[in-house]
Length: 199
Image (cartoon, rainbow, N blue to C red; front, side, top):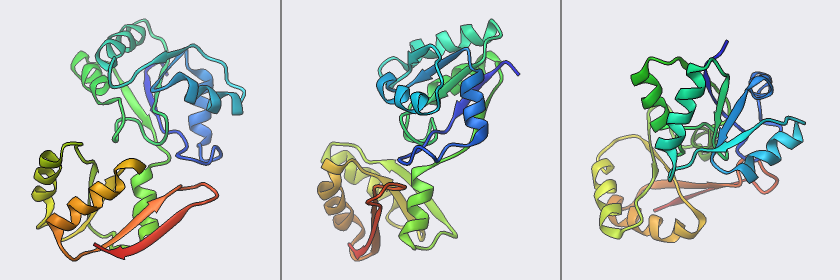
């Protein structure tokens, strides 16, 4: 069917892609991606050649209009991020909103999700959890976000860039005090690691 497909891609291991995702990418008229250099590696691994267009946080509104126009022309459009599920801590939310407001159909081809994998690998309670995503860069804003969640009696999942780990963990300790935690990295890759610790 001609519509917009948000397609989850591998978070590390290139084999973690569904048959349906590959079929969708093969049948797409256009693929919008966060970084064309990154996506072309995935497509090359599966011998898929399609026109690629950028859709990242700096041009998402403009990309959303292009996606909407293509969808109205009854083209099949796939939207991917560099790794994992688009929209979740990645571009795509603006596109969803534009399509919803225009009444254009879209769907998700589900697959890998980094925070779900991290939750499993952490061995922390997973019956109730909150996904917070990336913390802001500025110390004051970081603390303000953490303050909102400090009284939640559940596992909190964060994304963190390698260069921000020390600052983020220090801010968490400052806000949450003594609490069980886990750091998970290199998910699905050779050096996958999950380290439990106390803040």
